[in-house]
Amino acid sequence: MKQKEKNLKNKTNFIAEQTGAFLSNNIAEATNEAVSGMNLLRSESARMAKVLTDKKQGNLFEIIERTKFNVDAASKGVDVRAVTTAELGDPHAAADILIKKGGKTVREAQAKSSSKAADALHEMNQEKYHGMQKLFNSDKVDRAKELAKKRADTGSIYSKEYQDTYKNATGELKHGKVRSGGTTHDETCVLLSHKNS
Picture (cartoon, rainbow, N blue to C red):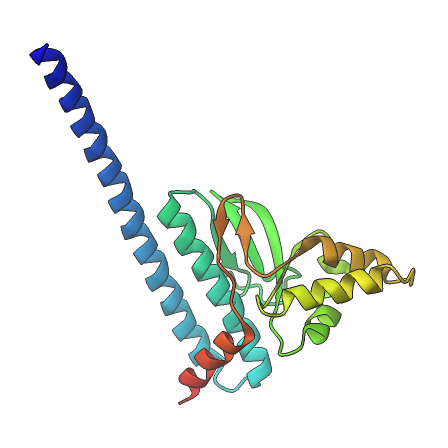
């Protein structure tokens, strides 16, 4: 009986050690992702020093969401990462954010940060964004979806795009069990005001 108890204790200790190592690795990787995101935020803010505030806060929104998503993925040990197309050197791509697994893009997202849901919805409602995850500020997404649904039901020539926006609208960057948690418009603007002071 003693040997069985000893074997069970050894197995339990091994599992606990492996779990601890796995979690420690995830925490370290999540910290690396947070530092990487902050470095990107700093460099983009400096690069965009002379860019209009509205445009700049939209770019910061993309970086914040990308960073939050990557921290969550790393902390969960999930092998997906988000990257902005601007940091890849393609700031005029249709997608603002690519979610990648290895080198393969598994999801595209278009991000719009605005003080008004209607303004973000108007900008989001383009055919080139069809099928993409449509990322709104977390405090604007419900209103944007409400407006998209109403406009989709009108039967106008834009109904198809409003239907797509309604279907794909989200207040957080997400893929599988990985979530950014969302970012409000005020959060982005507060960060921007700190960068400008």
